[in-house]
Image (cartoon, rainbow, N blue to C red; front, side, top):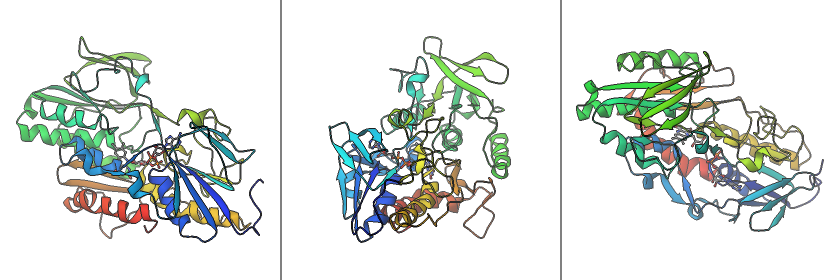
Length: 401
Ligand SMILES: Cc1cc2nc3c(=O)[nH]c(=O)nc-3n(C[C@H](O)[C@H](O)[C@H](O)COP(=O)(O)OP(=O)(O)OC[C@H]3O[C@@H](n4cnc5c(N)ncnc54)[C@H](O)[C@@H]3O)c2cc1C
């Protein structure tokens, strides 16, 4: 193994990505003596993406979920404002777009997920027009509330691609909020709401799936179309074209509002690197988050192949695991901390109601509160709206939660 010897008094940890995962680990490691921690990230800003669901529903502005990256960089961490373009794990180094080469004793990869907008034909140039919108980026999230508040009736379509995505529940959360908004606007009677998903079920954990299907029935949303993957949009005819993956044929659906969750994949610079598994994600052990071939490399969050739902909540549990195991490896020990696959999805079902799904690798509930979380609750909506952002900015990003 190429890491430095345990006897050295100073070690260099390089973290690729200063998003949820990168900063959560950086904050924890920066508190340790004898470590130089560098975070490489080109972005000037940092978004608390879970709030975008509520931004798209008109509850708050996208600026309310954004801070300057400089303001959230943990104390004692060196921020390298550059993008990594190449990994050289045999020589313990990364190369940046700006022409720098950074060497490390330990590398932590937390570069997030890539949004493959271009894989939906006809989407380019039409976001924000013809009722086409998406909560999935800072640049597009305002299009959603515009589309919802200007909707006068017809077919409102919400899509979920056939790839892994971040926050598996987000494509349907905005649908439930839109249903609520249409009722408030007095247009629900003229609307048909459809959910087209590349997945075979409404939600991975069966425990919560039943509740969501009841919500769909109660709200009189059309019966969901599973295993349907959006591949093309024709704006002239206002049609969305799906591959019916089960039947192997095309399905055409008229739309007046189309909320697109784009296909996603590992960032290209990871896919083409020696760190990637055959799926493109960084290949790590599912319990220790340590790379399976390069023992001084770790990964967490959306870019990793950890077989759980990709959420910030999952990162809250992955980060302490990675931080502990980094220290173990630097001390010449085997990684002692284990991640159990915990993830959580606050499933907003309307303005003021939410089912707080929490589960592990076995998709079994791993709930925090001493009451049945598989119920729509106002208190859990308030938790998402008001408490979780504070927990994120003041807890997770400071290495305290
Ligand atoms: C609409 C929506 C709703 C969501 N709702 C929830 C929710 O309710 N609950 C929940 O827990 N999660 C939710 N999530 C998911 C959550 O936001 C992500 O899972 C989480 O942010 C992933 O963290 P990450 O560190 O892996 O990636 P990110 O936080 O995306 O950070 C990746 C970082 O890597 C940097 N980067 C990229 N390329 C490079 C490069 N080449 N070199 C260096 N740096 C690079 C980026 O600039 C970025 O700062 C939601 C996401 C969305 C979009």
